Length: 114
Length: 115
Image (cartoon, rainbow over all chains, first blue to last red; front, side):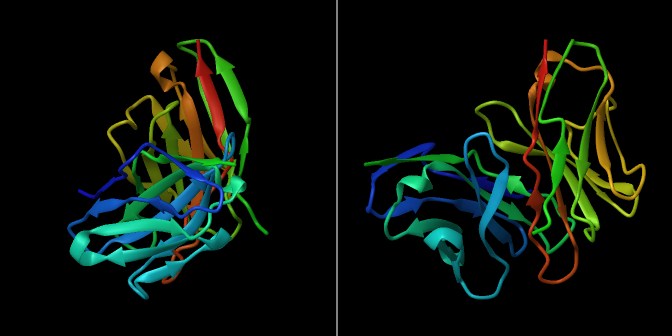
């Protein structure tokens, strides 16, 4: 079975500070990994994905994540937080390219202080 | 840009009533999914659907749940006899399939409240 652990249910940063949201995965097969963002009262929007190509993945809104197999991690970073980044962030894993379910982590709520 | 749509956005129902949640996936997509998110909890997989049949379902997806693609565009989730614990946000998702097409696109969700 696959699983995802997101450390820190709430993270608070100052505007302009580094954002680091942690995600560790467990998978018996090479995983596909995703970060989704959920703004209040909205659906899930894909930020970025890792699908066994480059280990450093760049996404929308200045976010990036690095797949580290040795650490079973896929942490999400952004060099400089913006107020508009305040949202809930979900890490997810799947087994194969299409048709497989996503298994989500419990989410991390990011707050950005002025 | 094509998007997944869901109706209604909110639904309130009485315990024991049947509800049907509707989704229109992106038109050329082949794989369809339902997920739910109980308030304050993580997003959970319910069921996946491909080629007019269920390909996988979770233990949550018991006999009270069913899915259907009645007309080639809509994808519905029916809960036959709702329970209080069915109160959640229900998300539909779809993807096109094939190499490089891993991304599941999510609809805005239907918030279901069972009283």
